Picture 1 (cartoon, rainbow, N blue to C red):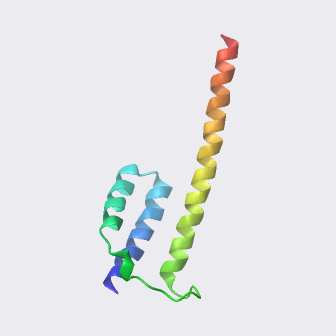
Picture 2 (cartoon, rainbow, N blue to C red):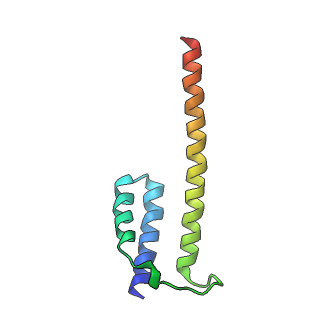
Picture 3 (cartoon, rainbow, N blue to C red):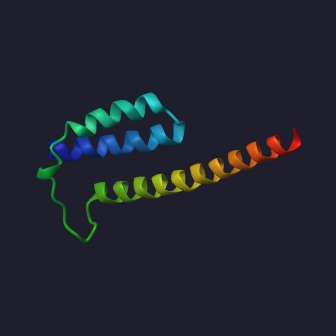
Length: 87
C-alpha cells in the first residue's frame, strides 16, 4: 500500500504542477515516478480504486495540454508567416 499512496501523491502533485506550469516540479516528479517499481501495482478493472480516477484525470489534462500546445504552435507559425509577409 505504501507504493499505492506514493503513486497517488505523485499523481496529485503532477496535476497541481501542470496547472501551475511548474516545470521544475514536473522534472522532480518524473524522477520520483521512475523510482517506483510499478510492476508490483495491480488494481481491479472496474475502476473502484481512487488512484485510477486520478490517472484518468491526469490523462485528460495531458490530452488537453497537447491540444492547446498544438493550437499555440499553429498560431505562432501563422504569426511568423504574417510577419514575413509584412516586411
